[in-house]
Length: 295
Image 1 (cartoon, rainbow, N blue to C red):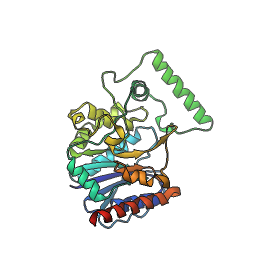
Image 2: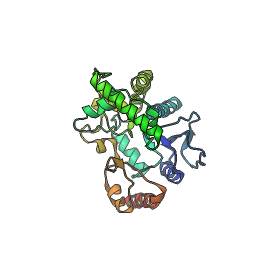
Image 3: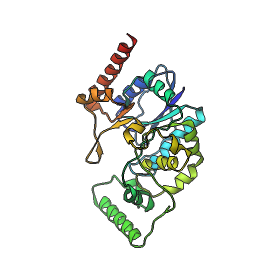
Image 4: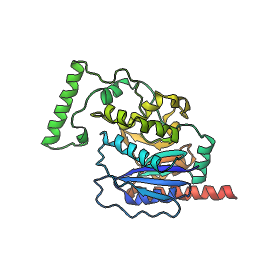
């Protein structure tokens, strides 16, 4: 099985290089998108994996449709290269927490399954706010301070409130689903996503955080829903270990290493230069487990 790793990155080059080392395997090709705001593209070093750096770099903004666009771009570039058994979306601050032999064996055993996390519970209100309403100034969601930010937030709020008053709700006939945007999907599902490229671009214009919605929605409304690994457990289905606190993703620390290695997850996020010793500890733990297995 040949796998494609699709990486979105904009900072933390030290973590990115360790991620590439962990993915460095003849069975993997790696596709990297460096955000346009990244002034210096670091030197990429691998021994076994082929690495393809996307030349058409986008200015990716949190919450904006540009996140959908860059993920679709990565899917497209990898799909054009060749047919892969699985396509894994990762950020540049993610890390595998199992060996490459383990990961490849796992996906071979579960070939045909889609590893997509679906948020549980009632998400109707959240989805309505994010993709059934129009959002003004979508590239500026993270703008927090200053007069410009104040007026943008005020206009955005008034614009949303007017849509509620006048009962403006787009895409009312579509069943939307949401979850983590970090997924591992088959070639067949990638083919379906790319066939709906124009529809996706149109549907999620002036939306908010649609990167957490578009793959889940396409999957849910297709035959691939029946192929999802675990529809009832988002973490188990995506095979991503992500720690949330106060609606923010928190770095893993050294006390979490054993927990991560013994988990059923295949990948974890996120890590940083400040916690680089955690990444080294995880990689050492994986190596020790491999040695024990060989014995």
